Image (cartoon, rainbow, N blue to C red; front, side):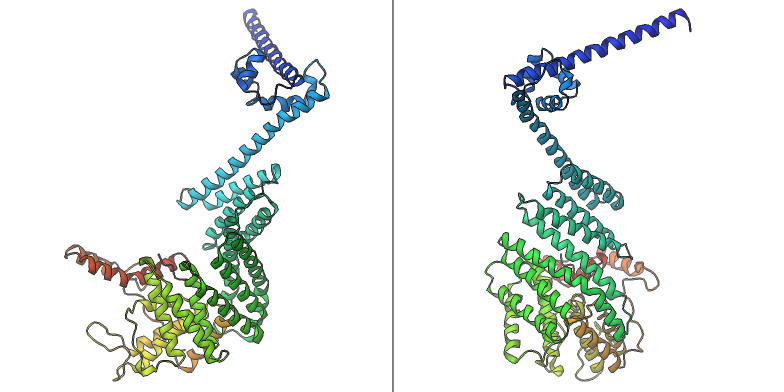
Length: 548
């Protein structure tokens, strides 16, 4: 190395050493000033501007030394009292601790805000398709672990994050054939409920309800997986094994719904509380099984129906969409377990609740439920089969098939009656230029829905009764050997695509023709809405109608 280079290197070292000495001196001045102000009890509550002036430096100089707030200086001095040459008195230390608590509190608030912001951002980005669900889960799990480690007392915030994680796993469940996503979702719900309950300060019971609802979705997914594993013609041992497998899940549903009932009561939501209690009693009925379970299931329907009939506020559509088909299933599955007066009471409750469905958005749901009960009237022998007529809106039958076993069985029965009367004077559906469906087509369709009825249905309770009935009808009617029905005309028969010829004909016909009037458009939407409802249900992977 040349003499010039050595001199240059020595100069840089001297300059660096001088800077370090100045920084140490400034840091010592900051600490010494803080100690002096603490001794006179002036530090707590002092602004950064006033503190910097007392030190004799600029605010940015204090911040460059790692202190965003005065309380940060106090906290650091308590932890490192040896950095100054003077001894701190007990009174000064106490004052520094008081001032330093603000730093800890501020740090905690920042961590909590960061966690909430990350959870909200991830949820929004996933919903809009801007984030991979798997990586989002990993990121949020790490943030949850960090907050739980540093601020375990923030139960409500941790519960919010657990709820988002449960929702993300539920989003993944449709593409997960193993069922692991449902299990992980429930695990996060369980964690979230415990975190929420451990935070005595929180009164966000709406979050509690969200957690229990996501827990119910997860458990239903796990139960569906077990039921889906049953063969088309299950043996007694198959059913017994499935009942043992679902029993722990029904116990979890009962506990979840008891928790939700308490939260709804605290929120002053009597309908929500009654709905949770209905699902709790129903889960316990399915768990008990046998005669006692059937009596409990019927009792749960009566209790819920009476509460809803007394309700003076508007009943949410989702409550009626779930409860009314179950009321119908109870009457059809257990016709002889109730006396005439009890059937009359349920009829009265049903009419009252169907009348309570109102609003333009609820029109499709109301019509579908009316169609469901019209089919049940025939089944219960209150309407002669010979006088049965097709629904005013045939498309409503498509929606009825999404009401679980009860909808599928009643539609299959209806289609079988249509097949049996086809071509006769009492034909349920008269052939015309506009309607040309043979008895063979009706038989194939009836077979399809009888076979579909037991799919994913419970192995106890009304659903099981109806599933057994569907299997019996399939054989007693001689439909077991019938072939599969054709796909919808708009679908391609040999692939998962669409019939583009049909679609193009429809599109060209629309663009080269005069558009409908307002009234015609309304009527067309009324007829198409059932198809859209079913398409949404299928595309979302749900077993219930996806009304708009």
